[in-house]
Image (cartoon, rainbow over all chains, first blue to last red; front, top):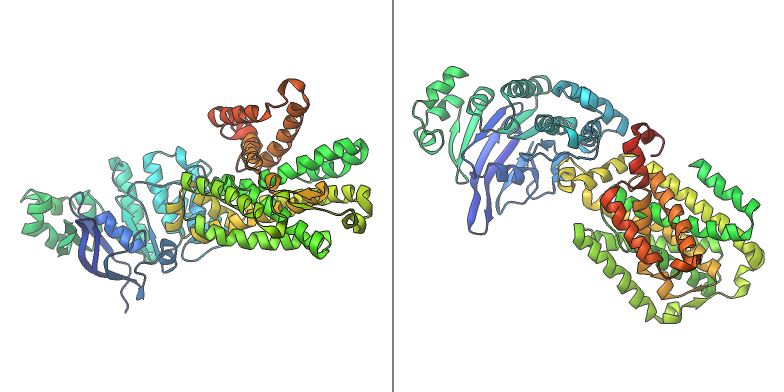
Length: 251
Length: 310
């Protein structure tokens, strides 16, 4: 079976700083893979390299066995990838439904306008934005915009979804709701999800496997238990030696 | 939309030649504003150089008429093809620039084209080209030709309205709007932005190029200074902003209203050399107080009108 996503020795430098430093990982279809690490560890840069927003200096990216290294974003989308942005990028002067329709029209399946709008309504319902379909995207709350990011990415029917801090800035109820949405996406559509998150409790309970990045390089990889008990991870990121037990107890 | 075209077709038959001349100029302005709207209103790229399409179309068309004896329709088709291909190639290059840099580049395009044509012997250099009276014979003589040209211009106006409407309602148009709102986000959603931008830049050149042939054929002369008049290029932006960018009805209304307004200022003795000052002040006022133009203001005031004035 071909892997959903393969990264090999992926590296990106900005001047003298190596933002992403030799990252390799393999994700299977339908897997939820967590990416954690301190601020500035290179998580979002890694997303940019995978989605084609910028080319790597070294290494390659394969999606479902096809090399997409250095391709522009709209070509990577055709291979089955969709992503959200940490700093939300709604198409402000367009309605929520039109935003999602763009995702459907130009995503992996290249739906017709009519089909994309129909699918858009279904997805808005799934993420709980159906009552805002005709609102301008710029008028949504921050939680609404985050949900719109997810809806828009899903509209293209991706095989691989990159979620960049979709829980940050949401209140506990909204967090719970978003987690349910993420779980449902995987269960109902078998979409593989690579997720960046700072909410430890949430990512520990969601992920099948995790990678911890520190200064651009992988620090540890494994199941949530393995990672949370890793000494280096505790030292570099979690800070508290008892954190692992607390997290496991909560999730 | 049908009503606008019908009014243009019928009114001059009743009103006579003076009215026809005014409406002819109005139709040309509306064509310029509508096609400019495809770039600025739909795609979010400010093109200060839209007049190049009009002028170059005129140059190419008049050349084929005076030197090769082509009929009007063939000259229009030829001008459209030449200008569209040039625009596509140019667009693939300068559309790599964004925001103010793109806008500056488009001014450069106007000035460079004007200087090139003025020093280019083929199009008659800086004195331009004059059309011989015999060229009007196939249209039934000079007097009747003016009527024929008027109705051709109205046809081009109808085509501009239709194209604007169809693009707005299409998948392609949705992609353009996405580029306008956030080009990077649009590309991540799968919109092939470089290709889309080049296509719309080229598409927005076709009808103005044909209008250029008609307009200068009617005038009987084409000179680089009039053909590549940066002022008219900027006035086209005022028209589009006045009516309401990104809306079909707004761009058309703006083109027409501005022509009437300009005609009034030019003939009223108090303002005679002042119309550009007032156009500038008008643009400033629109940008500051009603960025959506007349139609945008209507939409905000009465949201129900969104469905009527697209």
